[in-house]
Amino acid sequence: MIVRQISVFLENRQGTLAKALSVLHDNGVNLRAMTVADTADFGIMRIVVNEPEKVEKILQAADYAVKITPVLALKVEDAPGELMNKVQELADGGISVEYVYAFATADPDGARVVFKVDKLEQAYKILIGKNIVNSDDSNENYW
Amino acid sequence: MYWNEPIETMGRAQMEELQTTRLRETVKRVYQQVPFYRSKMQAQGLLPEDIVRLEDIQKLPFIIKQDMRDNYPYGLFAVPLSEIVRIHASSGTTGKPTVVGYTKRDLGIWAEVMARAYSYSGATKKSCIQIAYGYGLFTGGLGAHYGAELLGASVIPISTGNTARQIMLMKDFGTTVLACTPSYALFIAETIVEMGMDLSEFSLKAGIFGAEPWSDNMRREIETRLGIKALDIYGLSEIIGPGVACDCLCQNGLHISEDHFYPEIINPVTGEVMPEGEKGELVITTITKEGMPLVRYRTHDLTMLNRDVCDCGRTLIRMGKILGRSDDMLIIRGVNVFPSQVESVLLSIGNTSPHYQLIVEREDNLDILTVMVEVNEEMFSDEVRGLEELEHKIKAALSSVLQISAKVRLVNPKSLERSEGKAKRVIDNRKI
Image (tube, rainbow over all chains, first blue to last red; front, side, top):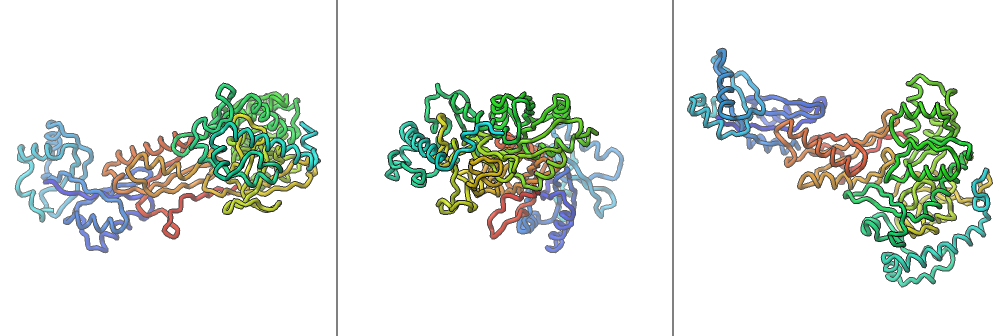
């Protein structure tokens, strides 16, 4: 499925991540997924939440630079080759992957993997065509 | 030892007579030759004949740096371009530099005042002068160069950079006088220690340091570390370049070559001339320049004047060390930097100018400029690469406009200090 991921600019200073997380906590936001990309000077926190538009406003009100980016979120079965096959399908379809991060869920059968790709709609169509994405994925509570 | 004894020891009355004659000629010339001055004077109902005595200069309007930009490039020249033999320029706000032009005679005057400055330090034709100011459009290098040649000294035109080589040649060539920025002089001193060399291997006696403000503490540090006399030299490209004024060995104020540059101190707010000895903004009128005479140029440098005869015997008026600026200009590694230049760079990159702050620090005696830029939603990219490209783009544009390199740091929105809602543009942490 396609989810609306929130990206937040963070300075690379002690305490900035804790502060951003406390803003989310104070507003009762539960994180479904999260990763932080970093350089020497700054980081980008990427999160998946239930109500991205609402969380975007919360973060903006707390003076963060925020961007909503649509990304692919796929369920990956807990078996060898599962992730490789999906990435191969995207590559074969001429899709470039910008970044990837994975995280566990309560589902014992598999993990979730987030893909930021250059041609999102095209990637989504390829995955539906190959039955990699199914109707089950469109359920909000799945996350 | 004097370079030009009649001028350097001229009595006050005689000097004022000379200045009056030269001022009247200058005013007459700019009125006739430069439309900018003519229209400014006409707007005030002034004719050149209204300037009779020296005090009459106060009737004349000021000229400011913006007027030079408005008349870019040659609008303020008082002679045809065929008479101009040299053009210098300093960095400008929107990429357009401030341009100055010199006639052959102007270059002669410049060399003369620079030669005086060297002689104040005790330098003679027997001296070996190493010039570690930048050569090029910047007036520092060539200005210091021709003055040293006129003095008859042996000149080493090494320009800036490559400190290890500077030091090797300084030792091998027997340099006696070093001309560079005071921060570079300290850097050289430290490098000498790092290279494991001893001061006894050098012949250095004096340094002529300028192009940036420095304190008496820094002077003492340079003098101790290099075992020399450190003299402050003042100048600005708009007026002529280095050599407008320079310390003598008494180090009790910089002698202004007032036979060429007539100084006034004004209240920067009201524009009124202040009584002698009071602190205010230095205003200079070039009373001999042909190429681009400036009448009542506001330097924005804060200082005070002293007409007492100096212990060295010179009667030339002295100005105190520069105490600061009456505007927001910064001098970083000898280069003039205005916060508005940074703003213009940021505007040229995004559609809106983000909040920014300039942080100036001195590390290992070299000035470091860091530009902090608040990331706004327009600039923010979800990808690291996108933000790094933005940083790089700002850095490249800054170095091309400012002529010095700057570090760029992206910071959170609204994280930069604001005082009373107004952005605080500059934090200068240099202890000079």
